[in-house]
Image (tube, rainbow, N blue to C red; front, side, top):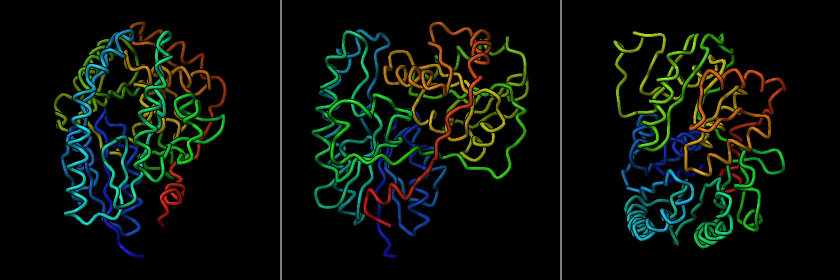
Amino acid sequence: MQKKHILCCILNWGLGHATRSIPIVQALMERGHEVILVSTGRSLVLLRTEFPECESIDLPDYGVTYSRNRWTLIPHLLLQMPRIFYRLYSEHAGIKKIIRERKINFVISDNRYGCYSKRIPSFFMIHQLRFQLPRGLQWSAFISELFNRIYFRHYEAILVPDHEGDVNLTGALSHSGRIAKHPKLRYVGLLSSLDAHDTIPKADIDYLFLISGPEPSRTVFEKILLDQAKSIPGRKVAILGKPETDSDPSQTHKSSLEQSSHLNRRELGKMILRARIVVCRSGYSTMMELAAHGKRAILIPTPGQTEQEYLAKHAMVMGLFYSVPQKDLDLLEAIQEANEFFHKPQIRFPVNQIQKIFDAIGHE
C-alpha cells in the first residue's frame, strides 16, 4: 500500500470536532499513512495529546460566537460575516501553502470550509446541512443551505457522521430539505473516540458531569453544575473539558465531588462506562459517544445554540436521552424525572464503521 500524506483539518468549536476525528486519524495511521493535523485552541491541544507522533499546525479558524438570545441569532451572525469571510480567505491561503510544502495527497476537513484544494481530492465532514432556527426565523434556513451548497462544490464527497434512514441522531439537521438529497452526501455512521472495553466496569459513579463547549458558555455551565451538584447525594465526578490545564490532585478529593480538568480518551471512556447517569451538553459528538455505549444521560443544551436545542429534543423524542433547558435546570428534579424516563430499552447504534469512510473517499 502506497504511503500517502494526508491533511486532517479540524474546527475548534468545543472539543467535539476533534474527538470525532480521532477514530479517522487512528485508522489512517494504522494503514501506514502520514497524517498532518491542522486545528487551533483547545482542539489542537487535545489532538497533540492524542497524537504526539503527528506533525500539527496551528491555523486559526473563524471564532464564531452565538447570541444568547435566540431572536438576535441571525443579526448576530450577519454582523460577523465580514470577519468570517476574511478568515475563510486566510484559511484557504494557509492550506494551499501547507499542501504545496508538505506534498499532501488529499485533505479531510471537519467543518473547516476553507480547507480544500483544486489540485488534490478534498473531503468535507459535517452533520448540520442546514441550520435549525427558532420559530419565526425558520424561513432563513435556506441561507445556510445555500452557503453549504456553494462550498460543497470544492469537495469530492460530503461525509455525514450519522445513519441514513429514519432511525438516526441528527434528525432534520442532516435528513431534511433539498440538500439532504445532494449527490455528494455519504452517510458514514456514528463516530466514537472512546475505546471499546471487553469487560464492562462496575457502575460505581452515580453522576458524571461532562463540562464542554466554547467559552464563555463552558464556564457558565461549569458554575451552574458544580453549584447544584453539592446538594446531590452519591458519588459525583466532574470532567471540566480544559485539556490545556493540569488537574490539581490536591483538590480532587476534598469534597464528594471529584474533579479533573481533562482525561485522555481511554480514561474518559472508562469513566463513562462507570457512570450510572451522565450530565452534559447536547453537542453532537458527545451524543455519539453516549449512544455508542448505550449510556443514560441528561442533556442540557447550550442556550442560544439552536442546533443543540434541536438535537436534545430529537433525542428525547427518540427515547435516547432526557433533556432539560439550562434556565429551568433543577438538577435534583431532573435526575428524578430522568429515572422515570429511562424505562424503555435504548436504541443501540453501530459505531466507527471506518470502512464506509474509506469507501466514500476512494482509498483503502
